Image (spheres, rainbow, N blue to C red):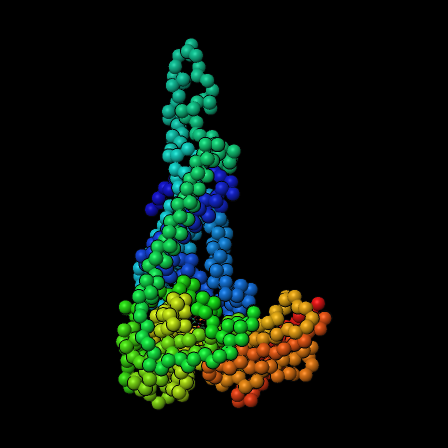
Length: 563
Ligand SMILES: Nc1nc2c(c(=O)[nH]1)N[C@H]1C(S)=C(S)[C@@H](COP(=O)(O)O)O[C@H]1N2
Ligand SMILES: [Mo]
């Protein structure tokens, strides 16, 4: 059945584009409000962005990370919004020519939002609501602006009175007495002539000042209201987060306290990374566009799969277990040589080894898959988790409950492995399987299934743009080879002889170590390089390799100018 939607007003492309963009803002803003109820990840921008994160080709992702660093997520959201704006403008232009097609275009975007929201791990039918309602209100806004009461032409627009068929209904003048004054020319009769703009729809000159004002005011109000509503939605969603629940957590005292940090572990040199990284400065890497808010009261950990004795634990039950506290340096496989995706913290948690001993993995279950509430997975060798190292199911970071963005309430921390194969945040499952049977998140995306940390060293000071004066300069940095330990760090100047740097003490082989080297700097351009040797005697290779598939190699090199 044909539904009459009204007569589409004749407006310029710019106005049409504005109508389309208004529709998009209304759609996104109202969807954000609905998402306060259905959860932030059901909002269309985040849902579609999440789909992009999971499916964008790896080189494009590397490029994004290289270009925007840890701001890559914001860049993605802004990019998605800009792209959406372009399509919305096109939909507006299309709608002026063919309203139904324009409305259908909004329908396509709503369907994309619905699809993205319901496709993610743990989604339900309610997750379709933000995109559905947003799409509906966006379509309504478009109609209001180009065919409804906000259009520049007078509204309600009434269709022209059916043109009087001259043959069957001759004008009264024809029957009147010839002596009567004949009416003026037929064509000038306002009662029977169709409105001029309907007869000649290609005349945008018909937009009155008043009509233009109505349209622009309408669009302004819609954009303003939707923006305020959308921001309020985001804010309300933030209020519904778990920061209060986190603040209420009382961490147990460890039965196995962390060893004291030896005096001198922190050289306190300006620009040198501190030995213990404060939580606020700890790098963050994950695929989550919105940080998962996990309520500790409903959190469960399931240890299942190929085990003889599956286990399920609540947060209270986990906290009741004996805990240890350990310093462990975490590193990201995406860290470039000289990069800062590495940090050292004091983690409080339950040794994963003890939980696995209870669950009793079956023969051949050589992989433990950590699964986050948002569906992200990592695959850790079962043997590594049981070889005696301090692999933890951590609840505390530097004396506090885990920060929400670092995995609250519970995450994994495994010394010696890159984060992508071991450090599952917001963890809710440990599934015993085999490497042959399951590929974790990053493996089909081109990263190695095995991810032992490569020995690395970094020059923190001086930095390339520092102004140096000739004389005594402290060259200093960090080096790491978690679970093997660093035995030597060497520095060379201008590709000369390698000279041994001084190593600061460290808590254990599971943390990085600071090093320093005294340099009597001379005026001119200089190149400083560093390389480390692990306690197995292996020295970092000079060969430059990219971060994919299993971690960068090469020597960190800094060029400086001394005056
Ligand atoms: N749920 C979840 N956990 C995750 C990730 C993720 O994307 N999702 N990324 C991993 C990667 S690649 C790294 S390097 C570490 C980083 O931990 P951080 O953000 O606390 O520094 O978390 C790991 N745990
Ligand atoms: Mo990572």
